[in-house]
Structures are given as structure tokens and as C-alpha cells.
Image 1: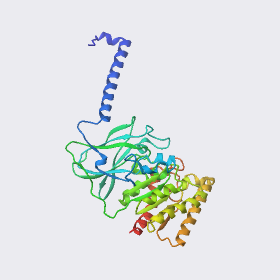
Image 2 (image 1 turned 90 degrees about the horizontal axis):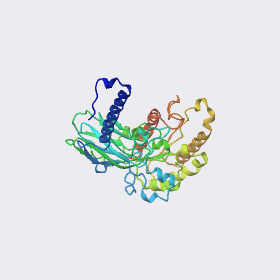
Image 3 (image 1 turned 90 degrees about the vertical axis):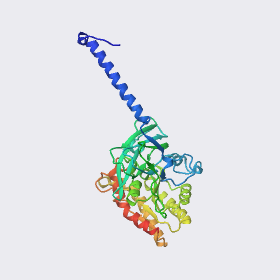
Image 4 (image 1 turned 60 degrees about the horizontal axis):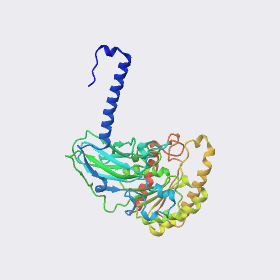
Length: 382
């Protein structure tokens, strides 16, 4: 037992020693509290997300449950595409709960949590939305700190009534396991089924489609559009690797979506566009002659208005894409749609983090431009 007198406090050395002891004690308490938080709480009931409704997967036969491509794609698609398919971009967990607070516990596949241009909250975090007043409303986000497994409270203070919720999984990391935590007295059940004839929207493209550099998974533009249209979607964005290769096209043709959204130009030069995109469309049309296809031009770089030299490469690619679209229309394709790139990010240069990858503002602006065209395409799919 430590004892000391009033006089001993007057010694500077002893005073410093006591301050160190107090600091160590406080640090230990904080570490214990953090450990208890990250290792779950006995007051919570944990439900494996697989027991709820998983949306955003194009194939069931994946090596890891939360992969985006089927296991058979290994060795067929290029290795970078295969590795990126392990990221869980676009996959969501949907459920109904009357919980007053909601937790998430998720185990990541990669230790790298963030990128220089993208925070861990978007790359490796989770994002909670709730259906409210006929739409989807943001409720809370889980941000990983250190380590592979994080358990974190996403929201609290709600009244105990049933609510439909949706959690987006990480954009630039994979997950081994995802659990939803609610108080023991709360229910956590399957959500209402989607309309019987609803088909997903398939988005194919680059890091922008995958979600770089959103601050939260729900802010990638495919996710924003999925909420606005209240439609399921499949994110086939492969960062830096959207080359429209035939192997990927063959896999895409296996799906049966309401609409294909094709947005690969930031990863392609004009020659690649002229050769590969007609082949991709032909592969899709062979399997789905009446499924609408939306083509999206490359976005204008943020500094292009005052730095015209930036425009050269992507202007040529956009011109080639326009030719392809016009040829398809002339050939009688009535289910093909086109979105120019000049207005996708606005006109003030504020839409990106690095001239290319959108911020949340940029993604919202992209969704604003794409939404009306996508609505027309969805109507044409019926």
C-alpha cells in the first residue's frame, strides 16, 4: 500500500512520480474501456449479417462470402481485377430493428485502412442509413481505428419502434465477418422483400465507380443513386483497372440487371475505347438484347477550365465514346443512353480531391446528372 505525508508532496521528484502513477492508472482505465468496446459488450445481442438480407452481390458462388466476383474468375480475369474484387464495395446489409441503439462489428481483410486521398471511414468503414419519410436518411457511420476487428456504436437515443435499416460495407477493403449488435430486448429481423420484378443496376468502371474518394461508403455515386431510386445495385468498379477486357465482359453478361451503367473511360485511352467498348456492348447485347445500357463520358478534370492542356486525352476518349453511341443509335439500338462528362462534377473545380477522384460533393453532383438519364433507362427496361 502506498502511503505518503503532506510534506512528501512538497518534493518535486515525488510529486512527478505521483503524477506518472496517476497517468498510468488513467491510461489503464481508458485501455480497458477501449478493449471492452472493441471486444463487444455482454449487454448486446450480436447477429451475423449473413442471417439478414445481403444485397449488392452479383454471384453466389464466391470464394469469400463478401467477394464481388465468382470464384471461377480467379485465373481468368487479370490479377489486379481479381484482387480488387475482394473489396466489398456496394455490398449492403438490410434489416428491420426496433433497437434504441445499433452497433456494428466487422473484421477486415487488409490492415491498410486508408489511402492518401481517402479516409479510413470510406475505405474501411461501415455506413448506416434508415428508411424515413419515404426515403433513406443517414444515421451513423463506423470508423475503424487500429486492428482488423472493430466493434463500434453507430447510433443511439432512438425510440423503440421498428425501422428498416441498411448498412454499406467498406469500399476499399474486404470483410471476413460482419455482425449487427442490438440490446437483448430488441428485435433484429429480415426486412420487407423488394418488389418481385426488381432487378439490380450494374455499374462497371474505375476507382470512381468503386468509390474513391468518398468519406463514407454510402457516398459513392452508385450508392447515392441506389437510395434515390430505391433500387438494388451491383458495384463492379475496379480501381485503375477498368479496361473493358473480354473476360470481364463475359462475366457481366452472366448477370440479368435492369440497366448496365458503363463508366470506364478514366482508365482507357481513345484507342482502347474505340476497340474495347463496342466489344463489351456486343457481348452484353448477345445475352441481353433489350437491356438498357448507359454510357458515361470521362469527367472533366477540376483544373481544366484554367489549364486546357489537361483536356487532350480525355477529350479524345469522349469523342470516341460519342461515335460508338451514335453508331449504335443509327444501327437501331433504342435501349442505349448517353451522359456527357462536362457537367458531372460541376463547374467550380470543387468536386474532387485531386482533380480526378470525387469528394462527397463531387459524387452528389455526379448523381444529380446521372439520375434523370438512369430513370429513363429504368423505364425503358420494363
